[in-house]
Length: 479
Image (tube, rainbow, N blue to C red; front, top):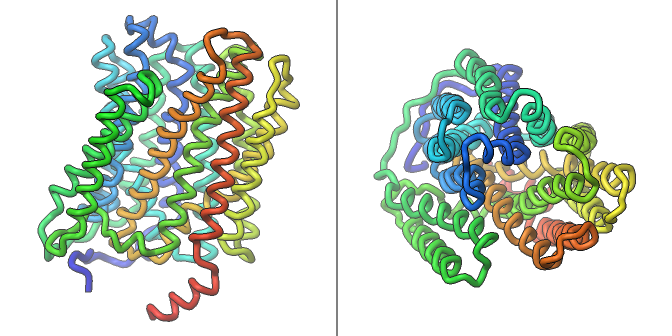
């Protein structure tokens, strides 16, 4: 018997259709916001009078609170109820988006972006936990996560497209305000369709110290990484912050081993090879994909000379490719285990990134963007859903939020670290002479390194993830 349990009605009370729509609406919102702001940054700077050194905090404020609070958000969802935390997160996100769109000063906008991160850190792990507890393992869950992965990619691509189009036609404020109506649909569906949450019974005291250590440690880690891109990895400030983050997270592990607490992250969860392996792969995928969207958007604008709106449209084939890969994964997932799909999709994505790495200063959309986009995106679509479903495989319903928060944390940390590291490599390779040739050389190097990271992820999957036979044996033993 677990020390904390959830006393509730059956999951069958949930309506799968509206539940899937609500969860996908949340993921669309998160993916959209991660990408839509980037293209609007120059207009934001001009509109509110940002100094060049301050502008990056429009991105960093969101990344800090989102990445720092994900573990806590997942645990709170398990304790207070997935539906309740999902609704609260959506409300916070919608209201902070409204505040960001009406901001009259840099400080107000940065504060609103930080509050958006708080809302996202609550609603994303809660929504994944709802998805996990609604759809049982097997064909139904594979289909649900396949649709979720397609929406994830569609939101990222639409973010880039809408960021350019909306900024040009309506102004940067609507880049923020667009989140409000998008949030209202999943909010209404969650309110109307999801059953009431259970009363939580705790036999141990809440893990306040663990929550404080995890939140401050994760925040310090993300802060140190995003600042390293500006200050350098050997700068004293970078070293001090990253060392402090490592110390806080080490203390967090020590605290979580205490038998007298209701842990924020039960360390025994990491003994589940499916959970650990999927999170390692997710971290590396996050590093590669965040860098891909950032570097590719720079290449098609600064080297190929396209406008923000046209550059955004160039990402649509990537989104369509992910949808195709997700549909294929859903279909063949009836016959192939998630491990096999990951071992196919991750190397295929790496091939696409390797192709990206050969981009040319006088390149064309057909050869240097469209071709590798289709290869990489189909591979990404094949593995994204299986990664998420594998990360929650064998996890009890009352720890679904915890597992989902861990998965989201891995993706966010991977994205922050990957973007900082690969961006630094690209800048170092480019040097001080900013020509089409030097910029392309830097971008190409970053893409090749990202490809090797993905291959490292495939190797990790092969070594860490259990085979279907081992999983079947483990399931039989538990029964």
